[in-house]
Length: 338
Image (cartoon, rainbow, N blue to C red; front, side, top):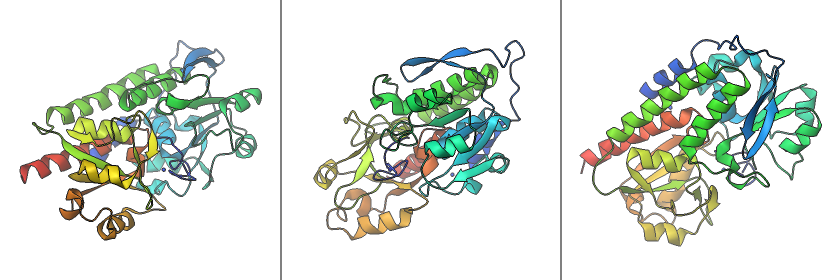
């Protein structure tokens, strides 16, 4: 997802297995650049709502797990120079692509910045808007364009990108990113295969989703005075929906956003999905919800209906589908208990 905690999380940084084994299979071996395209040629690909010409990158820098996972899932490790992982991101050793992370450099454990990109002699940066890319921190696609550094933004984060916005549902945005990256790196066939695999897995979960009235679900990202949660424009909304639940804030035409506890109470969620950061573990958030007078009487809290969603399953990336499969199983089991 890209957001303000999701890249210094919902506040200053913005905001795992049977499914794991399946995801690893999608990574496959290293993708081969399609032979009928010359690396020196440029192709036109959408960067949010803007048409941009790209040559094949050789020293890509990825910000956070979602960006790196997209590249690794397409077999592009040899084109990746390094990655940047802020504290919110869980250890890369937990990733299905841990062996690929080990082949490239960890450039920083803080936020993405222009100096780091220049020092790395990068020719391509992948990140989200208002996360890796930021007007306030002086690293935007426009600024990188002037430096001769190509860039690509998660389509999910294009919802509020100034000048060239683009709106897609989160899962569709994920598929689009993989297809666009496939075109940029001239591995369209691999991208088509990966996307087809992800769509098949989504369809399988949807086919088994509980029938009847959808369970109301509250995504708790962070915040005590006011909670930070998921609107309709970020991956957890699609995860909840495809699994058979209903995000209690799906009517909010926003990405990651702050709401009031009163709105949460009124919605009476039966399940709370906890977003688990590397620097804000789920157990601390659950303890708060059980203790706070604002939340301890919520149906989900009283019934101990908590589902932990890994950070990299919540931000835009292939692991969204891992999260969906696990949450789908959780809802089915919950439904069977009555």
